[in-house]
Length: 172
Image 1: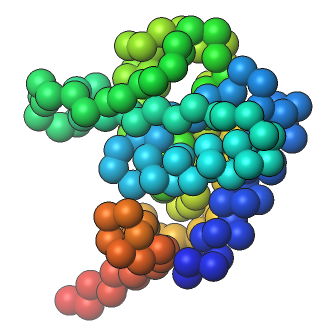
Image 2: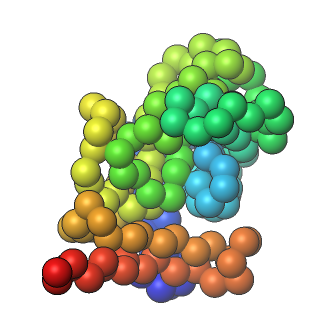
């Protein structure tokens, strides 16, 4: 996916989310740091433009809620809206095993109890370890477990790009 593909995909996702929720009433978006947050901001902006009313966007730092990394004390989350009672669209750039989303749900619940949580991802590469599936998917990629899927966003990388790098088979 290049920048134009990403732009079109996010536009489609924004419309799908609004249609599934009968508009933007009571919607909020929460993006997972690091690259899920810029994707979330873009989705919130696109939905705001379509609806004519602001769709708020939060930044979720899931590091303190991971079960597979050393404990982190700092938390860079910014949640500028009341979570309780909102329909929250949780956004990440790639879904793989589902562990990041599990941690993100814990992080989100730290701020309140949403009415509903829906998951939107730019890329679904399969290979789940947990029973977590996105409600909205930009692109479904067929990958091998060892492949590397890299999402670059202009906010951090200076370019919008999704690339898959296949790991060469071990020929011993």
